[in-house]
Amino acid sequence: MMNTNSKQYNSVLSGCRFMVSLCLMLCLSLGLTTSCSNDDDVMDIFVGGGKTWKLTYISRNGSNQWYDFWGDNEAARKASETAMENENNFVLNFEGGTTGATTGGAMNGRGIKTPFNGSWTIGEGRNLTITLQNNPSETDPLAKAFVNGLKGVTRYEGDSQNLYLFYTSGEITMRMSFHVQK
Image (cartoon, rainbow, N blue to C red; front, side, top):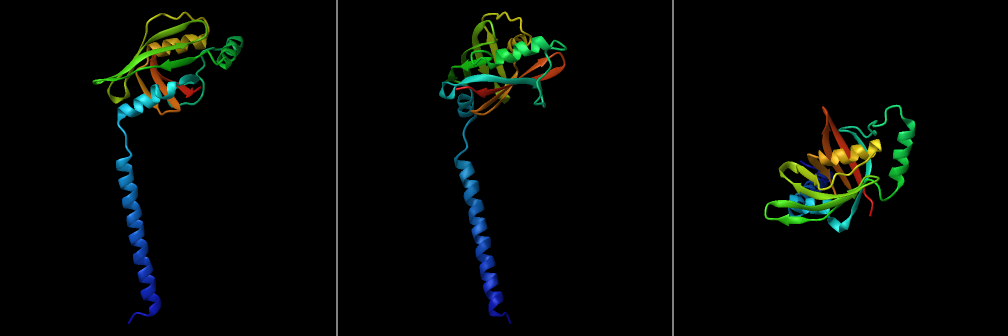
């Protein structure tokens, strides 16, 4: 025969199981109803709110450390760092939309010396193509890497606050990391 405490314990345990199951079902159903399409994400990432993307760093893929574009030239490194502090340098702006199966549009930006413009197109699997319509001429090692990286971009990752553009330099996969400037 069960005592009163055991019955109360089993009743509370049964109630807890029910509540946990109910919460789990609610969370799962919420996830299904709030998902969004890839097109919505792409537009939010690239053009949402008219944002300007500012370069944070360029690294080997998988690293968060600056790639050494300067070798032993400390003066060139310092010049690049000073140029990075200017809010008008190392920036990208995207405009565009989705037409049929194509997502993309116009883009513009600036390394250090030369503003540039071009176009961008998203393919399947987060593939990205950027075409620069003018050929920016840069002498700074970081600005050269920035422009050459944009010309060679193959894919992207990110969200509305962080953008990662990937390109290959020789045998190395490189990552340009950006944050929203405004």
